[in-house]
Structure formats: C-alpha cells, structure tokens
Length: 347
Image (cartoon, rainbow, N blue to C red; front, side, top):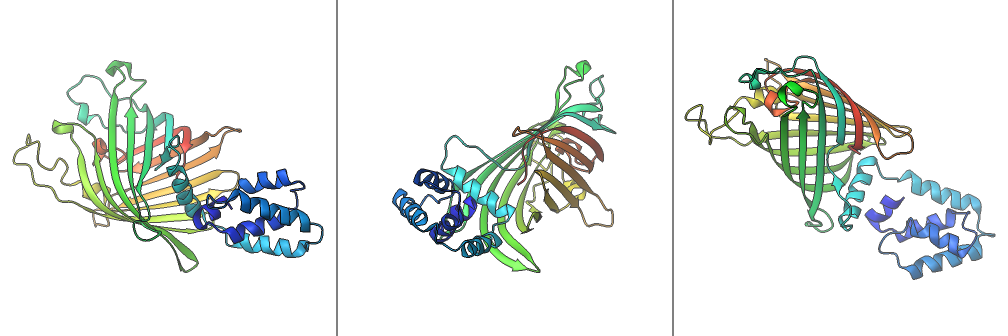
C-alpha cells in the first residue's frame, strides 16, 4: 500500500485503509499505523481527523463494507516493477540512501570450465579455474517529472569485476573489471496488452569499457531502448540496441580506432531479461542475448536468489554460458558456475 500512496498520493485510498483497520483501538495506535502508510502529502491534521472519525464509528461501521473496500484496493495493487520505481523516487529525497541499479553481489567462488589465458600470454602463469566475482551497480535520479508528472532522468554506473584471488602464482590479480556508465530517460505508464502491463520504457545512452589500453582495450557505445512488462510477480524486459560506429584503426597500435569491431557478432544486438518472484523471498531470473545470424552466437545467464535467515543478505547462485560475460572474453565462449551472496536484486 505504501507504494500506492507514494505513487498517487491517494487520500481516498488511505481513508479506506483506516476504515478497514479494526486493530487501532486507541488514537495513538491508529496514528502510528496511519503514519506508516500515508503519503508525504497527507498532513498530521488529516490523519488525526480520520482516526477520530474511525474510533467514533468503529462499533457501528459495517465490517462487510470495510472488507469489500479493502479488497477493492488490494485488487488494484501495483506490480513489482511499479513498486521498485516508486521506492527509487522515495529514496531520491534521502541523502543517506544509495539506489541499486542492477543486482549487487559477491560470489566468493566462481568456477570457469575453460578460462581464456590468451590475453595473458606474455606471462608464464596460468589462469585458475576458480576466482572471485562481484558486481557493484548504483543509480542516481538526476531530474524528475520532465514531461508533466512523468519522464525521469537518471545516471547509473555498474562495475563488474573478475578477481583471481586464489592465484598466488600471478600475485592474485584482477583479471578484468568492466565499467558501464549509463544515462537513462524513463517513462512510466500502465498500458495493457494481452493481460500484461507495460510498466515503463527507457531510452539509454550506454558506454562499456574495461579501462585498459593497447591490445587489452575493449569498449563500445550503444543507444538502447528498454521496454519493461509485468504481470503479478512475473517481469520481463526487451532491450534492443544500436552500436554507435567507430573509426577503423589505421594500424594495430592506433589508440583511437575501434578496439573490437566484431563485438556485435558475439554479443548480439538485443537482450531479453525475465524475472519471477517466487514466494518466501526467492527470485529466479534468466538473461538471454543473441546475434540472430546464421553463424549463431549469444549467451544465457540463469540466477537464483533466496533469503538467508533474518538478514538482509540473500544467497545467490549464478550460471553463465556463452559470450560476453566479461569484455576481455567477448569473443571466447565461457561457462561458469558461481555461489555467494546477493546484496540487492533486480526487483
């Protein structure tokens, strides 16, 4: 219900909640419950008035009517994406809150079946199959309501790192760290099609780079469109993109030319993400990429998260098979299995 109030500032819906709450036996208890659900636009005086009216009429108010009203409100409950967007706007006003963008996780154990040692051919040491992997992804709301009460501009940054932490023969180096800043313009809506709700559409300027030079440099720029759909606890998004062309290198050592002209052949030109929130705080997700060519290449990533006791951390299992798990390996097929901890999920 909190999201409903944050999103619409619905004073009427709040009134229905007060009427349906038969547990507020005193004014103090009623006010305490009301504050937890009211929108920022609702004043203390309005809360007090509603509680006083409720307490005065609670013995004579028809319980059946209150139950019917509560059911009507519940039937219009927001989906998981709508909740996520509302919470992001809510955290915007709190300077002590950082908003997650993509999943934030730490995988102390990731096993790769065929690690690619070719980028490190100038060293005598070999890459180990087991390493540490983590991702840090944050978002900041820059401007909101650019189109009436819609249209929000955000900046996001994601770091995805691969650490040979157990490889003492190579002095435990970071094998790869990919950096991905993005500028996102989000339009929210509630368009319905075949029982699905198009919760949001995004226009994205995306840069991805591994921050290296010379032969190990990898980077590309993309213009993306992300369409997000949901039904109950099921969410999927389709994200096609257009790669911004770069000049060809005049020589292999030219620092200004395209470092990876064939990257689309391996990473494709779209991404499909499907997520499902299972009961008891569990989440399943499947990410797919494909180049849609006769020489077919792509990737699939499956993940499963689950609660750990009463902590905010969740257990996290991740499987990847295909191309582009890291930029340094964009043209090398990788299969990896990881286990660890999830700090924040997609939803």
